[in-house]
Image (cartoon, rainbow, N blue to C red; front, side, top):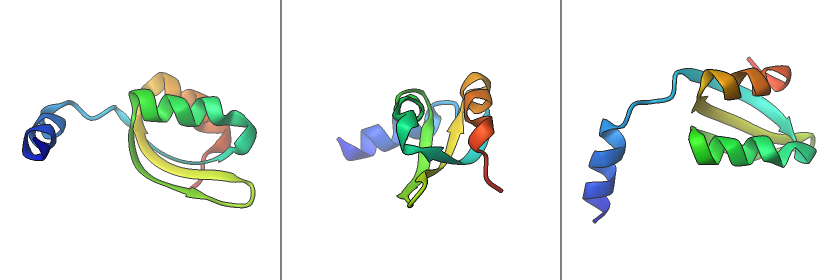
Length: 70
């Protein structure tokens, strides 16, 4: 079953925009949106919020833009 899931995920298109952002804890809605519609590469909890690296849609990337990191 795990092999089938991996193959399906490999064939699905990757969302268009790669983002790195530090999302404040009070914006859990954005973290939920990344999980629901994006591909989360990594997430780390820091003092100021959740640092995420993800592939997301252009719309979600625009919402995450104020929290962008290099």
